[in-house]
Amino acid sequence: MIRSFLRMALAWLAVPLVLLAAPPAGAQGKADFDHLATGFALTGAHQNTPCESCHVRGIFKGTPRNCEGCHAAGARVSAVAMPLSHPPTTQGCAQCHNTGTFAGARFSHLGVAPGTCATCHNGMTAKAKPGGHMVTGQSCDTCHRTTGWVPATFSHAAVAAGTCMSCHNGSAATGRPAAHVPTTQACDACHRTTAWTPATFSHTGVAPGTCATCHNGSSAKGKPSNHVATTQSCDVCHRTTAWTPATFSHTGVAPGTCSTCHNGTSAKGKPSNHVATTQSCDVCHRMTAWEPATFSHTGVAPGTCATCHNGSTARGKPSNHL
Image (cartoon, rainbow, N blue to C red; front, side, top):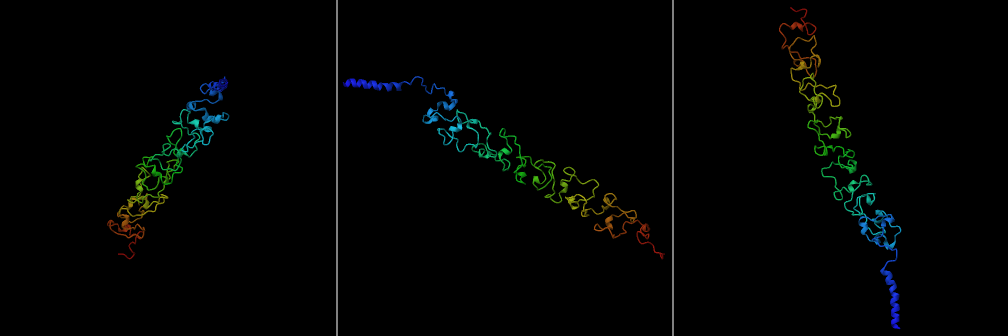
């Protein structure tokens, strides 16, 4: 009787063992299941990922089909999420990464918020501004393009006034040429950032007495050929705000050279009824006041007294004269 019971028990236990040993008719394993039929192809690293990593607790419905649905903090699916140090972007993972590996991403600047370049281009995440870069508080994308770093379209907006020389030093950018007007002013005092020339020149900051360094006929208009003969600097007589009229000073004019200017052309000359003399004007006339003149007979030709002492130009012979 005992033997009969054991045979019946073994026969009953054999049923589930057979069922576990062989899958039911029509069942499929991962190897022969066409996942593409679900509308989501398994490529790259997804091919070797266990089914339960995506289909948690055997739930198939509602499984995300995009990267962000799984590779995100707090997602139902257990997948590596975007790290906190990731470049800020609104794009999907697939724009740069592939399913084979996260490394070696093909980065696209599309979707990167304008003005946030330095969040990645900080010298750690990506190449940063070099040490010799122009001094500016602007974002990289103000001048540089994401499609090509160089050439840059430079904008002077946000460049601090008076700091031109920090770039225009002959290295970072074209500097002041050797023939430039000598001045202590910053470039933007005369030049515009929108157009280098023509410059609106200001004489402020130009050292007194240095006019001829520019007004030499090359850098700027020089002294004309019929100018008064003088060794003085232009700014002794001329004003920087208006070239004419000039406030003339005889200081520096060589003695005995009066007629080089007082010739009737450059300046008023000797009148026709002037005393006959070969002397220079400054022998009798003062530079501070033309008259009265302190007359000196030196140089008057002998026998020509009456040319002046005629009762008109000078006192003549009185009626009771010998």
